Length: 517
Image (cartoon, one colour):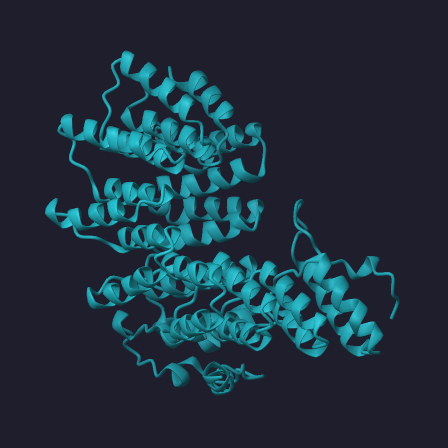
């Protein structure tokens, strides 16, 4: 029961203050000369929380930002870090845009391309394409140096994901003629367009664009590797090999990236022997294997449940003058877990710490999944508390996985603790996480806590799903909590008026409720 004792203590530490009525200067103890070293994770968390907790659009955000974040606090790295946290926090894109515009208006510093790209990614991820185009047009006028191939890739990739083939070509034309006006588009820009289709596994469209535009944009080795990558993402090894041999016949000379793509394709399909064969061929061509190559093979050994070979490949990295990084450790962990060597995989986390190798979301996701397969509730709880003690915030898929495990295994207090931890860190949990928590809490009669979590999410500018809303609505009615139901409906309606309803999103619409209050 040790974890429950710790949980009660930790819950007290992560309670969210009802009113963040303090000055950032005092709260964060920021001096008038802000140095990058002063921008600790605690300070960034606080700024993220202030932005997420602000009742926008009921109250304008800009005056609050001016009060809480004086212009002298702003620096390039500060803005980048806040935007990075807001992106990871799934924050409301319009709030984030307010912060970005504030940094443009009140800082003497030139914004960085990294900050601009983060902002663009946040808008396009939420499908606010009109806002994204407005931002690009503004930056084109005021800071054209921030327009990069990466920013082009962000908007084209998201349009390829959510819109039509014609929309992508139209966007490419708009980028060339309007946004990047004066810049002559060449093969590099063409490669960005191709990659937008390939990353979405739209190979028919990628082939069409390639055939249509290759006379205007002469393809290079990178072009061919992007197309190979697209075939790999689609999981069609036959198509990869046919295309590869066709390219070789036309004089295409493969490089190490080409081999990495083909090796990865075979490994993911469980054809580890073929991956090793290509690896040997790569060395015969005097192409030095990269750490990515070895990491891919380690993962491939795990797919066929050969932990001995995985460990051998891992140990050989240093013999090749390569230093194992987080990805290599994660691949070995995954290989060990697939072969049910869980203790050895967990021990690798300690080895990473000893060697000062950063642990990322994949590290935690891999170990959590291994512990969950063995139904080790105590092990999951220990790792969870270890993660929280280190102030590590997992990504959405890991959050959802942990919450699902807690709810299924009747550990709702831990599920609530995770929710409160994320909110305290300034994050706005994804709707999938809320679905799990609302279902779990309501099934145990803990309606008030489900209501609290729902209002926290909606209040931070994110929609709850129709299913969660209906579940909570039904139980609030049963318990006669009309005021709470009315409050939730009003919050949802305000949010719908502010946020454009996007096709494909499930949005609870109180206007279509069966119940009139």
